[in-house]
Length: 117
Image 1: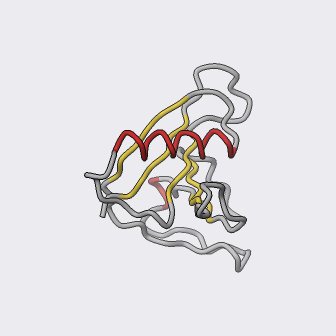
Image 2 (image 1 turned 90 degrees about the horizontal axis):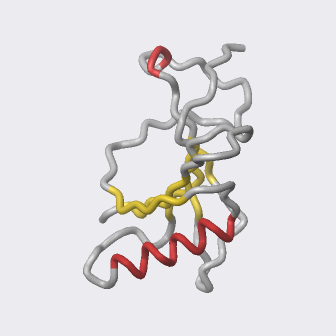
Image 3 (image 1 turned 120 degrees about the horizontal axis):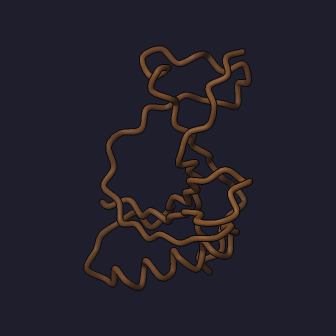
């Protein structure tokens, strides 16, 4: 019953299949605003869980526009190519991040994050 507003980024965990496409399972992360960090309200929907995310070191790439699944897949492939074989990161998932409200037409920011191992 508490309205917290939206925060950025909205992170969607992508689970790539062997061909690079994304599996149907997803996990969406929303940051709890600062004023609720110490004592977040309890979700009324049991499918919503509050998790504390530990600090991450990431490899990231940024792009604009209204991002679709194909955009995240393409930029993940570009990031993988740019990193080459030297960088070690989690291969079983990556994060697709959006920073802007749906009504923002220009200057949109999206990112793909690989988590460093």
